[in-house]
Length: 104
Image 1 (tube, rainbow, N blue to C red):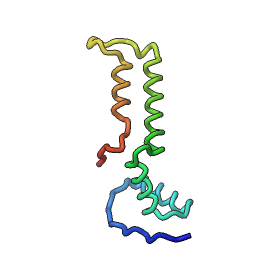
Image 2: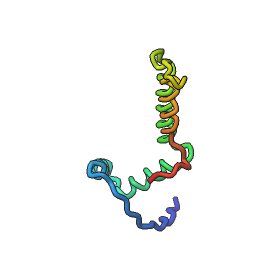
Image 3: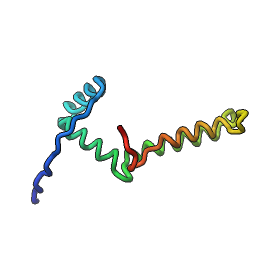
Image 4: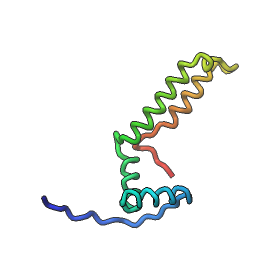
């Protein structure tokens, strides 16, 4: 087995909420994985095409959209002619993640 040379790392600063930092630190200690590595892995998963994280998130939203459209009460129409299901379904669709999305 040949070990490959580690890739050089570029310093980067990000701000976390206190609760996020505490959770990250707790998880890091529990798994014995450095916090910086966990953050790099999270970034890689978020921006990767066909990421299991994004697929699972979007599958959950698709299921929520199905439930909204299947609910008879959500078929009520507003004066605009649009149904509650259409309005909520569009909002949920807009929340779907894509690898090319830019986040702040």
